[in-house]
Image (cartoon, rainbow, N blue to C red; front, top):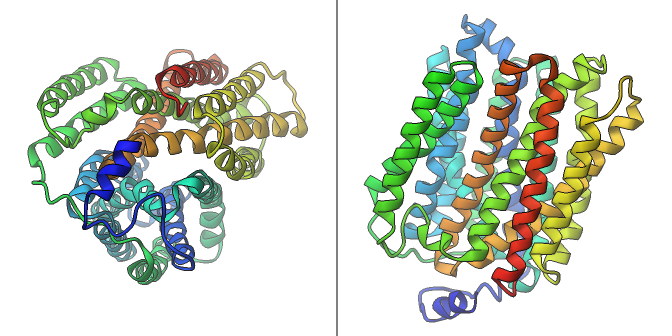
Length: 466
């Protein structure tokens, strides 16, 4: 970290050091813009799920084809994260962040006007590219906005906004669909995004780009790697195990080629240089396993609540709420502690609590009362809150300041890839052992969380930062 600060101070084009952050009240306006942007993109990623049957019927599309409304967005976000982060390093984070937000907002307008499923899927891909520009750059923008001494607090508040937005997405979608067409789900995003652009132009920190040549070959190879790995995992989860494994192995080959290409570069698009930093690498692995554990739970629990415990759709939505609510409560506290307590301890303790909570959910007897479910879900959320914020802070601060964009891109990539892995594991269980899939998935989630806790503790020996 010291070398990163020295590197920044040696750059006369950098307006402020991360030790300083932005002055107040500019910092408050910048955070308002960041919160609006990240909340809009997170909510948007979840609202379409609820509306899929309505959209499919309105556009005369088969339900299986309508899934591409979701896949087009999620896959585009994932494959574009690292290229957009590299573009932020080259051009400056503010430019790419605001450009991504504008593209996301324009894509929302095209989604509103979509006359067909193909048009809507293409518009969602446009939104996905814009969202990747926002998500990949977001940690870097927060890093330049907050003073280093209170960066954990800033990350904590950011986590609260993300978790609250994720929890609110289905509720907002249901409320809108009760009184209006599905097109209004996307219409909401455009004015909020444009309003955030106005605030961001006046308040976000100005950062100088490196001016390095953008590596188009590595960008394409990175997109190919992540795309093939995700498509292969999802194909195997749907039952096409042979084809899925072939596609997944092709992704692994692309990954090897990508790493070989990037290993000799000074500032690679795929951050091989950052992965050589022990704390950063261990934090990335912790993040991937932790989010995989979370998604095994989020994907399997609705089925468990319905099939094992006989709950209605409305009850399932309410029973899923204690996790993000508890996370939102824990995140600010863990953010403050992360500025003073070693990250290895905080994240490991939080993940151990997640493992315990998922184990208790896996062995929960039937029937179970609402209270039995709620306190177990809240326990998982509290543990996840103490893992997420310190771990994110560790990844961002372990990198040199000039590689903040790459660090943020890797952080978001680890999160999305972990979530995709968790969802794919649940799909495999439903294919292979349908009668025991939910409990097996929750047990696997507990194992992943415990393994992530062990990896987190390794950071105590890797660095004094912990």
